[in-house]
Length: 382
Image (tube, rainbow, N blue to C red):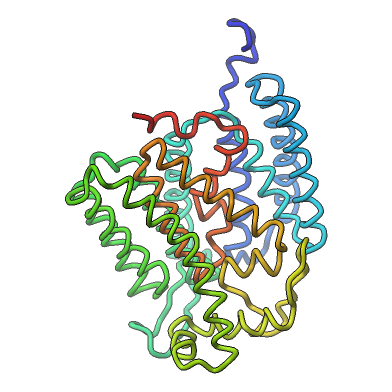
């Protein structure tokens, strides 16, 4: 421990996280907003600042917060080399940046993480929607035949699925912070977000997830009560196996013209078709491979398939094992809210890659609890 009075002791780990995640968030939001005249010099400046903060955060974890042993340092070094190599193979530098983000998070309670991420996300939504309302940003309209409403409004984002994803992240932050004080007010907030997602953005995936969230959170708080942890732990391990197995099995059945798979493919907006084609076209590799999305058939929206095909077998196995540890640790500390959030994002992965993005998936930051953040579950321990 650092002696009291040392000036480095006043540098709180949450302050570094706020700067780190804030920069990471802004850089990613740039890619989600159709800006007519992008200020690339600002983007490059943010990149440089982000790299400096990465370095400072890791040094603070090593020398100030004392989160490392020599054995742990070697493991993290090996994993860093692995992520860097896979990122270079697939030509996706953000994969390594995502690893550095999670690796750099120091000992911070998850309550502070979700508090900051929730406020930042909500302010970003308000700002971008306001710019779209004043005409500074374009409000693109997408049409989808057979939807509840034919117009899918983007509200300043480049894709109609981004706003619902951000609203879902805000809901997950609220779920964690208000879990023990849940009331009709929180239900009304979730219901309003569901209406926006279903009838304005017309994002089916997030709409279903909002209904699941409303149902399960009320089931846990008003009916299951003391049995909540056991129920969500069982659901978590079941979902971890079921979701990827469902995607891969039914993509195989689709390739063999199974009637049920053909019906599910239509329901899932041709995701099984694309997955079946990509599995046959690309095949599996140990360290990943670049996926060239030159045709609709190359678009892999199933998150688990994206990890397996694009990032390789090693990272897929690492992801599944790490997620299992998160479920177990959340159950050990009786974190019902974390278990529910982890469950919901597993089902998100059936339809979208968004659950792999820390900017749109606050639960992704829980992986820091397996690295340097030994405080992330402390506030939940009974």
